[in-house]
Length: 386
Image (cartoon, rainbow, N blue to C red; front, top):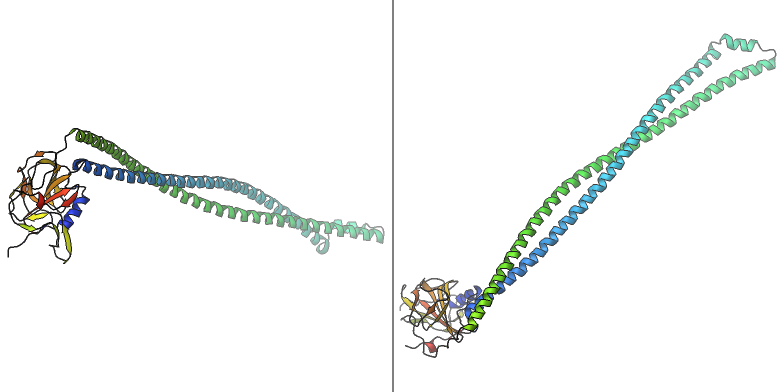
């Protein structure tokens, strides 16, 4: 049995619709419907791009807000650093002053202690003539007691002076130690704030880069939106012109039953309607046309007069030609090896459209021939005559 050649037309038809083509002529004609479909796709792309532009604007705004917040934080840290610097400078002055006071008080304490020590030595270990004269010069016991008490009070006063100066030295030392602690804490706080400032400065640079990047991306998308708007406007103008032209053209009468000629001469290898999947799997599929087995290079003729609405590659069909015959009827010719016509061209019945082949999804050389009414595949056989 001779090999039967099939086209997986169910899949081809789906792929064909995905491309925006439909081998059908209706009112409006397929070219207008195709333009409307293209325009719809453009509007959808434009909507998505506008949505993306809105997102890019929000993202840029958010980056700017983050940059502003970081800049405000840096300003606060700088202000705090300025305050810390002033406090540190004040503490330096206070420390220098207290250091000077401590040195003076320590020197006075040492002098007073030396005086007190010397007086004790002179009084108790090596009495000086002056002290002895004071005691010897007493006129009575009472006078002697008074003079001894005076000397004791003098020594006690020296001791009080020594103690007072020692307390002053200790207080000054405590103040100096407290100032040193405050100074160390302020220095540590300044180091921490300086580190925070450096981190924020690095963050500012990063966020400046993000703002710049977001601005460039927003501008890019904005340019894309503008470009799509211009293309959409052009497509809308073209569609309007096509509709006006279509309205001015007389409507072709629909081909009558039996008025179409066979596009090629050969056996029908796969009929219209449900059939087993020729690529295997055991499932049934809908076949929207008839397959006619012919060798590669066989001339393919127009089944009826009309206007070319598709002439090019269509997924699944390979090289494909579709003719608008008027009245909602169109024919399609697939798997061609060559195409001889162009979109918009008027063709006559029997005019060569191309050469048969094995392009697209096909199991071997053949022609798929379709008839459609308002885009819906119908059985070609009633239309085919002599």
